[in-house]
Image (cartoon, rainbow, N blue to C red):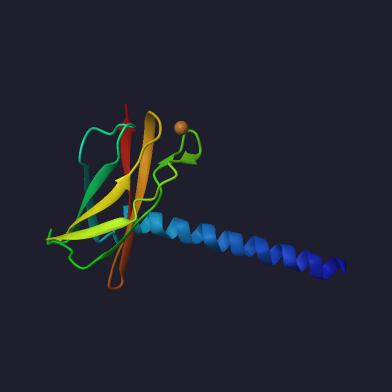
Length: 137
Ligand SMILES: [Cu+2]
């Protein structure tokens, strides 16, 4: 019984390592030469805790600055690394305005400090993500 149990544990460890490696790969894509998508983001107002925000994201090709239309965007819950918690609300209303411009809402911040919002973009075989950073007053 002892040996099979150990095998199970090491397989689980391997699975976790694989997940971690996948995350790393994304980061390298983003920082390295294979990065193809340029992310630009703007909030509708100075980030604050007393109302919801909309984040406008513009996607362009790194190579020639042409707008990326028809992409699929996924936003993660706004996250506060310093405290290890999120805002409890994922901006999952995502609308393509046109010309590579997308709006994401509702964006909620629940306390002052440093927040990040990770946004994933997929178009054809391109997939990249970007962390938008905000200081909430
Ligand atoms: Cu906090």
